[in-house]
Length: 218
Ligand code: 5RP
Image 1: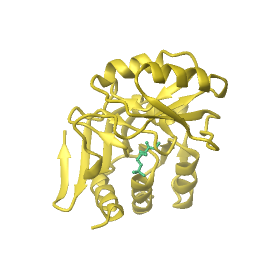
Image 2 (image 1 turned 45 degrees about the vertical axis):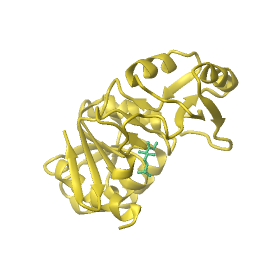
Image 3 (image 1 turned 90 degrees about the vertical axis):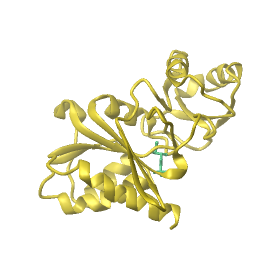
């Protein structure tokens, strides 16, 4: 099976968490895009979804699912999103698609965070995937110097602007042994909008798609 076929399989498995819901939070990325295609069959059940990016918003509307404002929905029962890396504590690196800030907000505002990924994303230690850090444009160089002090090698994702007008530094060569501490530390640097470590609020359920089938960690 290709990686994309595994992403589709795990998206199918995530439908289990959609059943009976009228509103849900929807993440961003190629794995979630498969889920959105499948959500078309739930149109009659779903009143709407809170979207984590402009890309997801466009896709949701295309399949006929209304997009709701998080300010109107209150706490969400379920948020489903992909990850770039996930560890045994359900802590993640996210933001490969640049949607980390809205993803973190919706994750925090949800009762259950369901992470869907192909099994290659499961790691012992976070950090092999370059850590995305969204910054205010004027702070980019300053934050980059702070990342070097932490032992990382920041690379500006040139030409990319987030949905919030932020720029992204992809920080290479970090070994994230204490994700909660590093999340707090990087988030406290002036100019950082969000760091792509999702550890203070990890996932509650992780679905991993592999050749052997779906592994559910919870
Ligand atoms: C976007 C993300 C995505 O969840 C992450 O990049 C995984 O993407 P994909 O499902 O395409 O592998 O955090 O900001």
